[in-house]
Image (cartoon, rainbow, N blue to C red; front, top):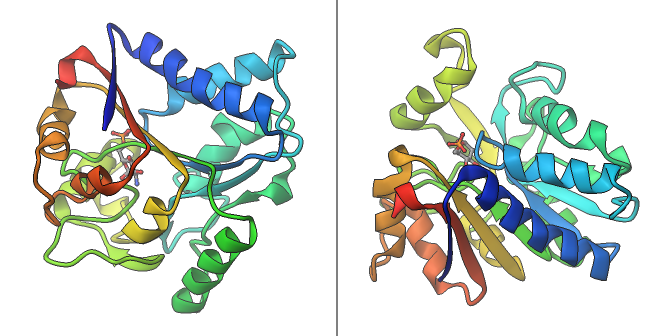
Length: 238
Ligand code: GLP
């Protein structure tokens, strides 16, 4: 795994955004895999700035998001759909119909997940996947466990993730206990992956990810098997 270390969150976000910007300039119909959480917010801000400066257009770009809480409606301000619209999609010229997300109100979750896998394939796969990392080493909502799912699936969130994500909700009880998420195999099929990590609380997860062992209890460690992954991080996580 290649590591690009930065002195600040802003510098890390800029370096990661430059990768996305140069790809979109080179391939206007790029398929981007997107993540939520607070870590990629700086990167999204840089993309918005670049669009506003007239440097890039997202007119032909397609996106697929990693995951969504379940159950949740898209209009709920805690849904990942709401997050993406607010922080990126509403601020750039991307066509809403080209922004794909798992539905938090799907009735048949198995069908929803299978259709999402097919959708990604029909788009020609993900050119560049952006990832964050959970404090417990999860990627998307692939939580630590004895087994990891290859494909998009419904999962129960661990107490650690519910606790970590409760900071976005008014109380812990409001955090949904389940989610729909791309599987490890779905993520690993991306042609290129960039993973962002910043802050002391990610130190242990990053250390595990960079260790020379694969550990299903630290899902991000599986990324070592991919041949084009770059970690963009701040000094405090190393
Ligand atoms: C959530 C998301 C992950 C994200 C993680 C870390 O659980 N499902 O995709 O990487 O949180 O979020 P943050 O960047 O806010 O620490």
